[in-house]
Image (cartoon, rainbow, N blue to C red; front, top):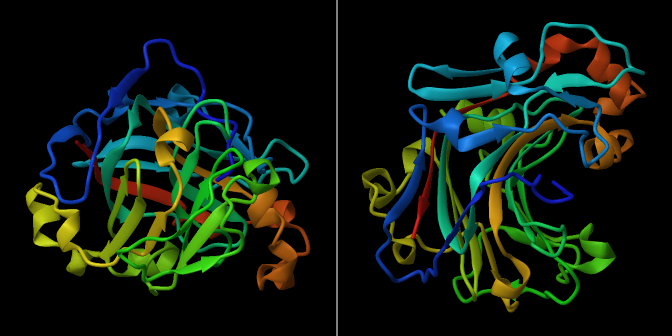
Length: 316
């Protein structure tokens, strides 16, 4: 998810810590249904990626049932009931940013559901620093249209070139290893070809867990389906050294220089500079020649266009 960086917020909490894979970790934040709405701000802003989307205010999102506490889970999603104009501002959605920002972290996100693999949709779970791309960006969960694999991507200012770290990785590196090429827009990516890592397939197995570790020397992302989550993660005593090869293992860059003061972001947009740009190369173009036309006229396609979060935990 390309970004202009987090939206400035007076009183943003900055948490700095230094992590290595062999150390014991202490829980710093546990974002869940009890504290979620006081821990994240709803961002009613123009979409930085040029998407066919209207990001609602918190009051609007709650009134429309698109942002709510549902039992002991957090629900946020997109409008799936209204036919709208294809030349209007776009389909209603919710974008969230954490109040806290981090320097180095182990972030573990437990998700019961993410937006499904639907034509036009572009959901993402990511972290980003200020003054994009200078503060860096890590796209942890991201995909478009009817894709079924997660794509992990780093975006930076020029100078950060990566290779596969000593842990190895189960995913496949694609494109440019220089994360700052193209003004940061190109990014350096790894595709996780595990069949349940994203979208509808992820939801079909009851969701799962993503863990993201970044420190001065590595950025690593693991994914586990619901029935494969390590016992130490479930117990709240995470030990990355015991997890084996991650889906993505980035090394070779001075990550502390390129990734700073990172806020956690969730958003679901439509079309725009990725889902819209590749529309003509996908099955979706056989359904409708225009991404925005399809999104506008087919609200029922997005009945599964929502996140259902059990928790996001940040460890030191």
